[in-house]
Image 1 (cartoon, one colour):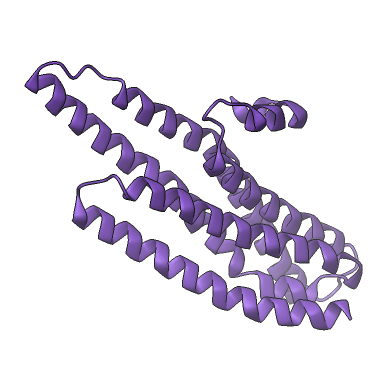
Image 2 (cartoon, one colour):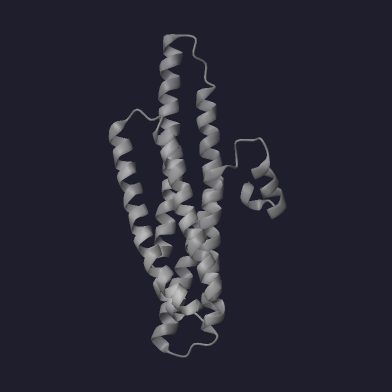
Length: 208
């Protein structure tokens, strides 16, 4: 599994001529690192907080970030596996009409699965954007740069995952499926952009 590799080995695989891991796994990793950074700054900040309600809210967000980080980490491997299955479908025999039809069905099925994995990445990273305003305002000022990095990683993750959604949708024939996925993708991108702009303003104020 990719997630069990040392960092240097994962990077080496990413740099190799093998198709996996690729951009989809990198997108999931970016999201996982964003969630992990948010959890870190919350843990550090909790040591200095006394307000009961604030502490409760921070612990709730920290727990959610830990769950999201775990899910996004698992999607690193899921993305690579989904792409490998697409490649397997393309390698299916296509001599007879029956074989060609079976191959087409398999390719369509695996492309759909491959498009849903990066969409799942986007859905999970979207959860993080619900917390950036609060974390940015309530974290210790000494950790605000880490929040900024988390914000940029989350933005990168969503944009990167969307590229992987689009490349798979491009070859899918089912227009109803394509529209449904595209609508979900567009909604997440719009939501994240609005949240990013708002959080960035707060971040800049606290950094200066």
